[in-house]
Image (cartoon, rainbow, N blue to C red):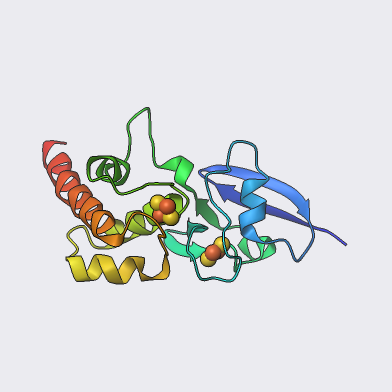
Length: 161
Ligand code: FES
Ligand code: FES
């Protein structure tokens, strides 16, 4: 048995017949060009699969695609706009906040959601926000520093605009 599901991903409606048990992470990754969302533990522990659902971070390995009918999903591929990296991406580059990169898509989307809600987070608030994501190789110090870098530069970009 399959069900037809339409989900808006990065502003584009994507329709597909799926098994009711299909996870959102697989729905996303089966969409051409959208393999940036990583699939790690499959047990809601690692946070590599985080995407934004209606602006809130969710672990896409713990949500059925069919539950997302009519919702807006935003993945890591949406961060770069018109050739411009998102301040979060620039922050990770500036502060050397990734090594293997496996956790990075989830970290970036988690951080994006944090700054959308709280543009000037403290170190403790950043650590709390990313506490559902595991990085096994960079260490969290640089990731926290990258999010602070993004917060500071995003604020100055807003003033210039
Ligand atoms: Fe979703 Fe690890 S793959 S939390
Ligand atoms: Fe390797 Fe985080 S950069 S797991």
